[in-house]
Length: 282
Image (cartoon, rainbow, N blue to C red; front, side, top):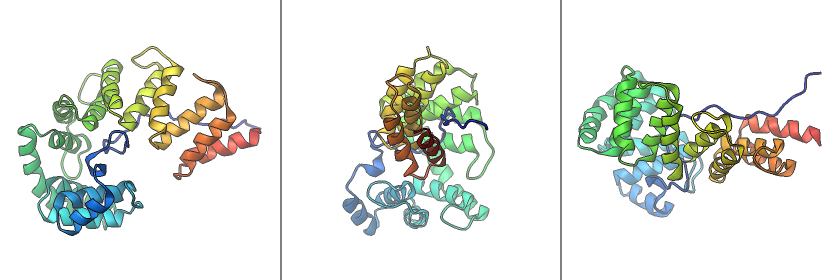
């Protein structure tokens, strides 16, 4: 009978939306009650931040795409450019609403000129958002990795962790730039040191694999732990795996189970599988 083995996640995490608690993104900076009050009083920025909380299930609310849509739409209708861009993406993907290319295009046309103007004026959030539009081709338009790199780089140099993480991914994959693990490491580290959870996770993977840096299980564990402690399921899985195999730290099935359970409670299927395999070994 074929022996089943636990799974380690070495796929580089993508997407720039910031979930890290130590990083404290803007939408988590204020108490929930304050944000809700401001949102009810038609403050467009507060409505956008409340939508973010519902989208990610953070900051004291349960995850709800429908509630995220409700609040991002209120914000967008008041002209908040980041909400308009996000609403276009939601219509394009059908997240929380019926998929509609027409509505996606309508909101994209409203947001893009304003985003471009803000980015040209040096707004780092607008620069990163513009980078995402060119990187993904979403909500509407053709991909241009070179343009994406251009805008990510402008934002990253201003210290935005989201953009530093995105730029690192471009170097890792060789999209719009010459592939370079060493440059990817530089930008993952910058994002990771700001507390960006997926930057920490990716940096851990680079140390585990020895891509662009000397292989070190101990350093991989350090960065997996930082991300795992912030609740990133992929990092919890990898830290559990390191405990299971005794890589970079003392072997402990109890600790492995602890971290697999944390990820499994978030609904992660790989964690559930690893947990079942490990329990059968006992």
